[in-house]
Length: 202
Image (cartoon, rainbow, N blue to C red; front, side, top):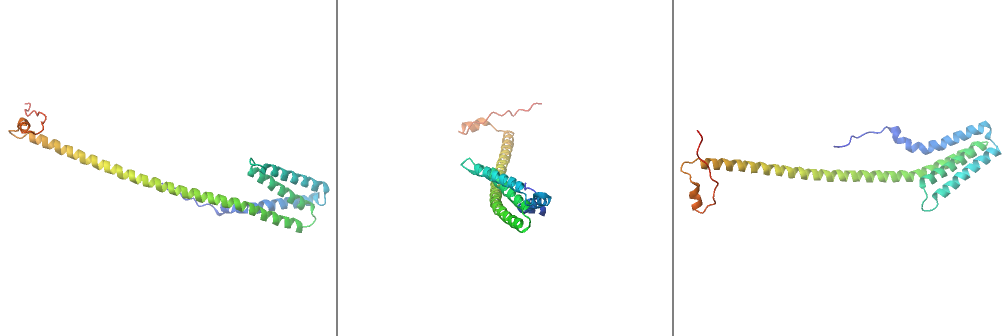
């Protein structure tokens, strides 16, 4: 059976594409809210954000080092470091040009990174779809061959049953003929036939 085709809503298709811009915009908005609530030119807040961003970047570097590095953890740590740096600048700066410049740069970097994963996912999805179609075709071919073989076996069985029925009818008819003697056939060199009782019970 063919799987039902499910049409996805356009919001479900657009949401992954908008996720990087939504994430960086959210960080920028939160940073500006923080700026309006006392973080502007606050050295202590700026120092805190620098320490947090550096710590996240260090964690990402350690997570990506060596053969046993985890790319998911490293990517998450580096993304957190960038978000903290953007939030720190947006909270500390007194104007919008620098935060907007960093927002545009962070958004571009986020799309550049996620585009690679989107291409990988698309390749994997196409490869899986091709593999599925190929397996369906192979199974369909096997099913058709087995159906033909089963049909041929049924026809052979039917013809064998019909032959056996005709042979039984011929033997019964021959045994009922007057003057039939199986011994004459045996004396003539023909294979011996099983003895047939022609007497009928009254």
